[in-house]
Length: 116
Image: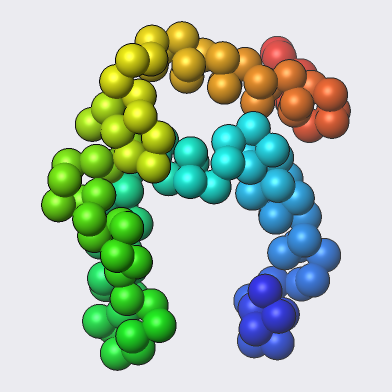
């Protein structure tokens, strides 16, 4: 974030607003690893591999747990497993519950746009 301000990509206010209204609200409903399961661990795998290769920097290499989950077809909700096990869950009900929680939080924070 500091580098973005330093390089003129965005103002401090814009970065903080984006985090508060984006990541902050989202991660209040879904934990970070749960969020990865929603999107798919394979996305993290390929993005991390690309970043590591492009920057030629091992600190961006794929975490072992992501690589193992990838090999074991445990990429998240769509595979039934990821960081969490969804095989015994009613996934549609779980999604509806989490999305409902997200909407309630947005309403509570007065961040939900009015319906037209």
